[in-house]
Image (cartoon, rainbow, N blue to C red; front, top):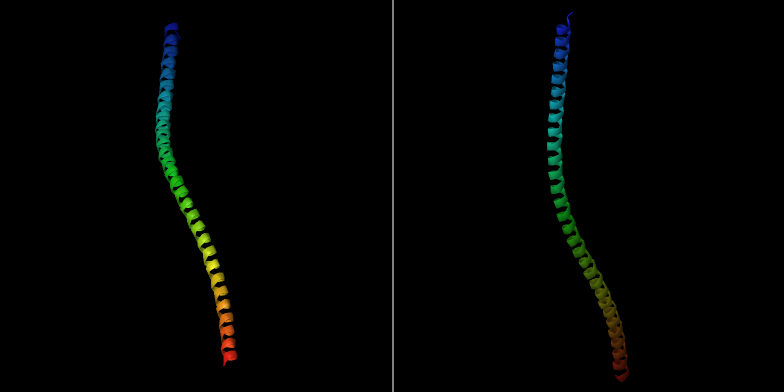
Length: 110
């Protein structure tokens, strides 16, 4: 084989190698673009989810505060109702005792 033919073979191999490298580079470029697109989508999804989480946390805090107010009101109302019941019971007891006393006085004066 002549030096010119050998040089031509090297040249052909070199051109083929360069073309193969360019194809691999282009394949990698497409993969990078796909990953960047997915990354952008995930970042957008994350932003949306973060906003939703913040709204839910705000709503939850308001609801828990309202529930605590309900609990406080219920506790205070139950305590007041219990006092009313105790006072009613005491009043009933006093009324019965006075009724018995009045009956005894009426019988004694008759």
